[in-house]
Length: 504
Image (cartoon, rainbow, N blue to C red; front, top):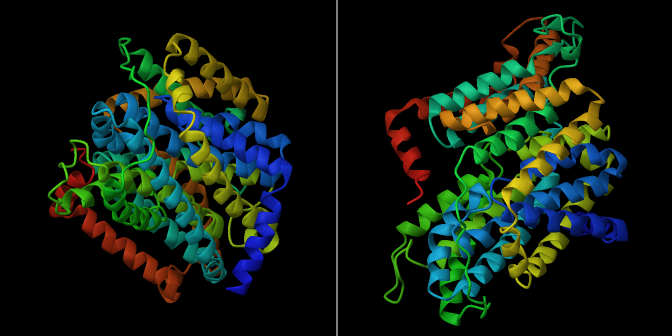
């Protein structure tokens, strides 16, 4: 406990510097704006800003990117409640009850429930991160190549379980990500693979180009393919931001349940905010209603507080495997890994011991960021709603331009700009096919690491595959992965999985 207090004191000393406070505020502000605007998200924003982090100190860069991530979780709830238009996928559930509350003239109550629940969950999620970071880092030092390989296999199977939509499509997307990841030069033998004699592919396909293409250009093409629709705005003034004591009493247990669930699911690969909010809402629907409560879906305050708490706790706890093990729990964390590598920082347990200012400074900045977001989201509701009136014909050219500039600045290569366009078209095709791209991104980032650790393990054992069974941790993880795979293929699980992701 004493060590934790000392570490947090170091972290707050780093986070409270004027420069880091400024970047934390900028990240939270931009993240909220991104969350409010439908069709965009933290992944797009972070992918666009990743090249800009070259010029920043490592701590400031990660603090800003983290602020964008959890700021977008806050911002997505504002338009979900006010205009039934979720800015973020994880805010879809919030819209079910939040918009009904707003239609009854109590929009302020719903906004306050979302903000308070998010603030509480964000703080608890950060506390979980701080408390479990050191023990997990000690555990991580027990990991060798075979253990890392087994962990990544387990993570990819977990991503299949937690991906929304068809299981077959999720598996196909992971396999495609693994295949894209092996394009380029083999790190061990030095030979090129699947480059088709194109020198531009010798270093592999740019991760930033793929992320911008799928999550930036793909969404733009999808939005442009739709007819322009009129957006419904609340014309009445948002007032009465503080809920009554009766609503607070109903809110508090829901916030605690959502926070607990989000803190656990956020750690799992592929889980994070989206599954946390859906699962939390499903639990609230199963809880018996009080005599004075309306059913969920008709304007129940628990239907706002629980999923908002869950998605923010999930976004905070998803930093745990990234910081302690170097394993990204979701595509946003994969981009955070990329940001660390840009600054020559190898993600994993050595970050905590070799760069404690970055590790604890980032954790401390999350508490500060959550307080900033509470201030941003309640008084400035009118400003965020005004952003919805920006015509999309002005918005999308700016996104296209900044994506192209960002990827060109990374490599000074026109090839990568063309790659964005190609993967943008592919992203649109995947959207039309109903195939989620998040498993592909996880396969892409974990694939090369899996291959490297597999080959290192076999080199150390002189080709003996038994090394994976002889080491207890790797054997346990592979057994868990096999059991998870059996559960995934069971017919009964598929039905329950579909019910978990159902919106109604």
